[in-house]
Amino acid sequence: MTQIALFSEDDRKSPRICECCGAKVVEYKHSFNQSLANSLYKLYSQHGATNISKIGLTAIQWTNFQKLKYWGLVQKAEREDHTNIGGVWKVTQTGLDFIERGLGIQKKAWSYRGKMVSYEGDTVFFLDLHDAYIRKRPDYVADSKPHQGGYEANA
Image (cartoon, rainbow, N blue to C red; front, side, top):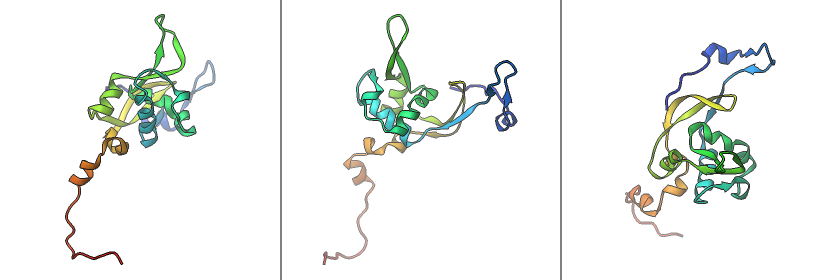
C-alpha cells in the first residue's frame, strides 16, 4: 500500500496553522512495535469482532490500539446499516495475513487527522515482535547446537 505524503519534510518540522479553524496542519509518525503486536494478538485470539474493553489491554495498549488501523490490520465492526458498533473491533484480512501467513508491513505509518497517508521504514513481521506466539519448542531445538566443552556436573 503505497500512498503519497501530503506534506514535505519541511512542512512536518514546522506545521502550518489552518486559517479557518486555527488547527495545526500536521502529519504524525507512528512506529509499529511489540505493544501494538500484542494488542493485535489479543483481538485475534478472540476469533471475531470483540469489544476491546473485554480483551485485557494494558493502559498503553488501550491508548494506542486505534493505531493498528493505519496499517490496515483492524477495523471497527459495523452493523448492517454501516454504523459503528461502539468499542467493537475486528482483525482485517491484512491483519490475519500479518499474523498467520508472515505478511510484512512497513515499520512506520504517517497519519493526518486520523487517516493513514504514507508508510516508510523497514519491513517488520509479526514473528519478529511476538515470537512467544510463533516460536515453539521445535524452533528452539532447531536453533540449538551441541556444547563444545567437556561435561561438567552441577556442584
